[in-house]
Image (cartoon, rainbow, N blue to C red; front, side):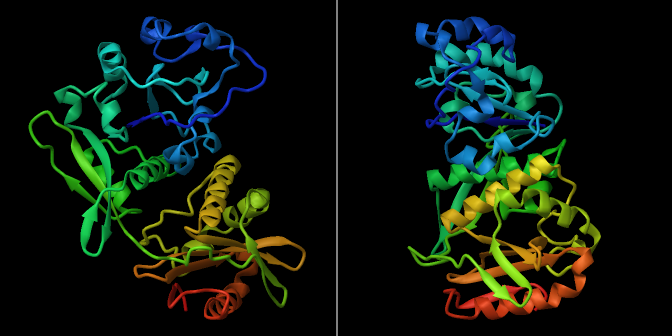
Length: 366
C-alpha cells in the first residue's frame, strides 16, 4: 500500500539549531536535480526538521504523524511543491512555494511509479497536487482517491476544510490499524469498518477509483459549551484523558484486551477495531487525538481514576446520529471488572443532568 499526501500551507518554524538541509540524504535521490533548482541561499543554511513535523495543517493535525512510529508510516509519501516527494523521516526546511506542475511532472513520474508496488494506492492529495503526478493506467486501476462529503438536510455538499480533516482521519486509521489492503475492495472493507463510505468505479479505463467518506452535519454541543472537567462518585473520579495519563492508560487497557472485547460497545463485530496492540508511543498519539477532540468540542473522552489515582478505565462521549445526541461507551480494566456497572450508572446519571446539553444518549450496555 502507498498513501499519497499533499503538503499543507501551514508549516512549523525551523529549529533554532541543528544540521542544515542535505539533499543527498533525502528519499528519492532521482529528484535531487529538480530540488536543487529550487533552493535559495537561505534554505541551504537553515536547520532542518523531519517532514513529519514540518506540515501542521488540518490534515496533519488529524493524522498525527509525529506520534506514530517509523515502521507504521512506511507507506506514506508526501508530495511537495519544493521537494517533489518526501518520506516522513526526511529532514527538510520550511518553504513558501506553490507547486509548478510542469517542473515536477516528469521527475515525479520517474520517482513514484516504482514505489506504487503491487498494492493499493490511497490518494489523499488535492486536485492541485494530483496534476503533478497522475498514475499510469496500470497503477490507476488500483488507485483510490479519497473524497469527503457532508450530508445536511438530505443534500450533499463538499466542504474543503472537512475534506482535509477526513483524509487525515482515513490515513491515520490505515496506519494505526496496520491495514495493508492489496485490492480496492479490501481497502473499501478496511475503511467501512470505521467510516460511512461509498466506492465509485473509475470514470473510464485507466482512471482511478473514488471512495467518498460521508458525514452528517450534527449540532453536537452549543457554541461556547464548557464541558465538565471532573466527576467524583465515591472512590471513582473522571477527568479529561490527556497525554499525562499515557503510561497508566496503556497499562490498563493492554492488560485487559479480552475483557474490553467482551464489554458492550467494543465487541469484535463493532465498527471500531480497537483494542488492538499498540506501542506506548502509538498510545500517546491516540491520547493527543482525544485531547484535541476535547478542545475542539468534537468529542469528550475521560479517564477513570480509582482511589489512589490508578487509571482503571475510560469513557468516550461522541456525537450520535441526531443533533444534540451522544453515543457513549466505557470500559474498565480486568482487575476492576466489578466497577463496570458502577461507572455506567454514574456516567448515565451525569449525562442526564444539567452539566450536559444532550436530548438523548445512547450508552452501550445500559
